[in-house]
Image 1 (cartoon, helix red, strand yellow):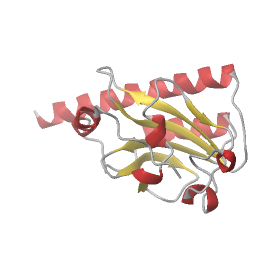
Image 2 (image 1 turned 90 degrees about the horizontal axis):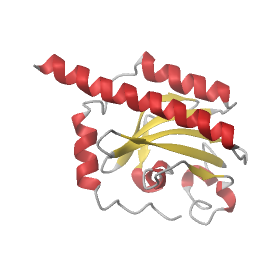
Image 3 (image 1 turned 120 degrees about the vertical axis):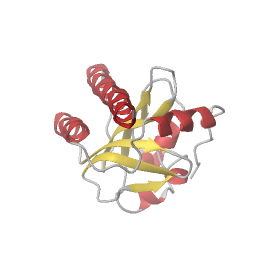
Image 4 (image 1 turned 135 degrees about the horizontal axis):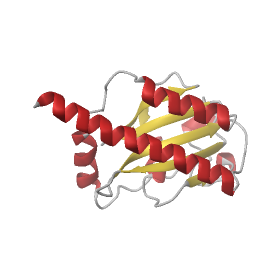
Amino acid sequence: MTPAPIPANDAERLRALRELLILDTPPEERFDRIVSFAAEEFDMPIALVSLIDEQRQWFKARIGLAACETSREISFCGHAILQSGLFEVIDAALDPRFADNPLVVGAPFIRFYIGAPLALPGGAVVGTLCLIDTRPREFDAMDHAVLGTLRDLVVAELVGAGDTQAEGRG
């Protein structure tokens, strides 16, 4: 297993994430609807809005996974936030970065992963909208476009959530 490297701008990224005031908040229908739609649209058993802090990936919204968070060290999303575009792993069991990952060799037995980085308007990537399957898969160009649109909806909600929370403190 190859843990994702820590981005050079991680301090700025974490500051932007904290400013959203969303970590460890209760589930919200506006995020749940997006992951529910994504799971249905792509016939995926798992769909998540995953936010990456210093030590963990925390799930703001989740379908098909009981856990609320996992270690950043074993996360696929930790790799995805380093990308400017979608991060796709067609068969994790055959990918040397993930083949012995506990999430591949044990529950939830990840084989396919695709993560769309959640880049805020200032450029900080705070997490992903990701889809996971227990069998190898591959997305085509249309799938990539639809996932990109859903990612943009999540970012719009995150930015709106931060603005709403900040106004409530005023």
